[in-house]
Length: 199
Image 1: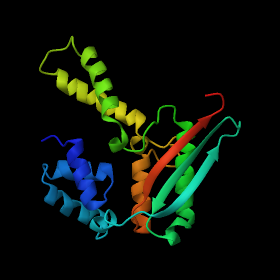
Image 2: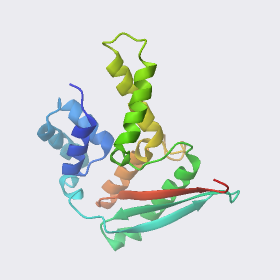
Image 3: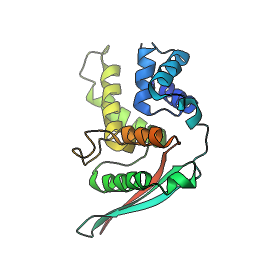
């Protein structure tokens, strides 16, 4: 059974679990959302159902300016309490996200949900044209695969952190999930802005 992005989003909304954790749980549960929640509770502990319901109204703004002074980024990362917002690990995570935004050539949106439908449809049309010489029965899978790969390139949470050695090839989503589990709070990368001199 194939798990759709809508299924993953619905499970994340119910649990606060990370995107990849939610997807794996749904795949393992054969698409059964209730069974997937059980699997997540085993993996992530009792906090899984509590995190997403808590408003992330505290947080921090952090910036990173590249050494040449020509590129920089500002990010907002939110959490539930002022106590965590002042935590060294939380602030370091926000700074690491800002560094990643500067280092990434392709990042445009924070999450899949932030990508406008018209942008997805424009890419889908291009991929459909590219797949037009393939057998008709495999075209939809090719298009969906290419669309998924494009989202990997443009969505912040899907990207492997540019400092691969330090972060052990983990995605921004995986790093966010780890911090969320460690702090017991709903950690949300709210937004970012990238600045390049002359652009």
